Length: 440
Image (cartoon, rainbow, N blue to C red):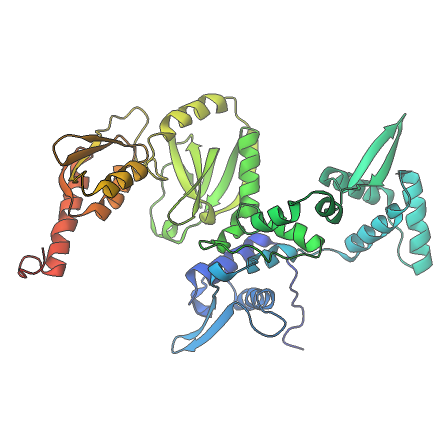
């Protein structure tokens, strides 16, 4: 048997493909044996798919294999700052379909192109004629009815009721016509096809019009995050409809930790989604959600979420959403910390030395980056920043960029202040400041 027999680029289960693409891109440099819990056959198939999608006709591409002493390492390598098109969009265009599905699609489009508004009976008659002429199997009426209903929901087909009879016709809103009639629309779609969430939609519109993005490059382009867009659509739907969701959190680190509060067996969580947060430092996206099991707001990384299921509407959603809005203003970054509801916390106060006459640029930076903190002058060249936030550890990470100016740290937690002081002493030892008079 040929070694590729039974292999297809088309996929039914995007979850599995998403896992492999994420591993190849983010975690790269893993050998075949390190993909634990997965069969060698599955690994080989997913690797072939990724390699096929990410290889250009001339043989170049973004998929890399390197032979080492540990084995062959597979990874995706791309300079995202020089990409006009995200190569990972290709995974969304590989959904499998049955022969009947694709045949019915093209027959319906052909029949409705010049027919105007027609009834279901007229559509069935036209399909029967075409199937008889080609010797193909006839379609059942319920199959055609379901397909028409699906296309109507997608906007591909318009319906009109005349008395008790429903008429169907193709929508005139084609991508090519919209681009031709709306000045600047093509350029706008090119920009958002690589910039915003759901860029894959813009990319698909360009492909439908036979166009490509040739205008815009993005310096900070997090191409792997498109693999979360299918999950993002479900979560945003749940937020809009104020419904609870259930999902699995499958981060690599989670498998090594004891079960968390609110976590059911197998990493399964039930939560009320509130908002999507985006880190301005990494571009990583998070789901902010309320976990009823431990009565706390929690942040989940979108790339660690899988198998999202929308549940029933929550009567308590408006009250929890209002509580979330009150709590959100006390997030310095994307963390609510481990603080319980109504648990008191001590504001973190950092005092630093800045000369306002010669270092105005430093003050401007503090005003710009303090976010939800406050800044006030407490001495001739002393300025105090106060942060009443849920997770002061996030502030400390930022504070380390001001090393050399901080003269006093108060509030927060004793553990946090001790860690900060320990980091300073360790850095002094690392750079030899205690023994080298040239290092100050």
